[in-house]
Image (cartoon, rainbow, N blue to C red; front, side, top):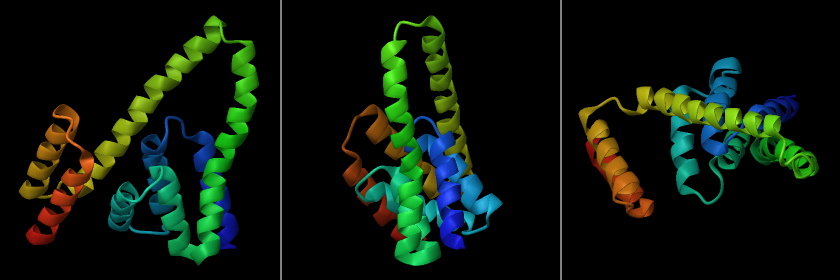
Length: 172
C-alpha cells in the first residue's frame, strides 16, 4: 500500500511542480511531512542536506531517499520514477505544442507567469528551511559566509559545503 501512496504522491509532486528541484522542495515537504507525516521536518532538512551533496538533481535525490526510507528499494523506485514521469510526459507533449505555437503572445505570457511562480516557490522553500536551519548564531554566520562565498565571490560550492559540515560537527 505504501508503494502506491509513494507513487501517487510523487507523481502529483512531479505533475504540479515547475522550475526544477528547488521549486519542488516546498511541495515535497508539504506532502511528506505535513500531509502524510512520513518523516519529521528535521529529518526532511537532513535529507535535503544529503541530497545536496550526492550527485544528481535534488528533487530526484529527495524522492529516492524518502522512498527508500519508507519502503526500501521498491519505495525508492516508486518515488523516483513517479517524480520524473510527469516531466517526461509533459515535455514530450509540450515540445510539439511549443514548436507549433512558438510565436503566440499568450503562450509567451503564460510562460512568463510561470517564471514568477517558480521564484516564489523557491523563496517559500528557502523561508521554510531557514526557520528550521538557522537556529543559532553560528548557523546564521555560516549561512551568510556561505552565501557570500558562493553567490558573490563565485567560489566552488564543494569546499564551502565541506567547511560548513566541519563547522557543524564541531559546534553541535
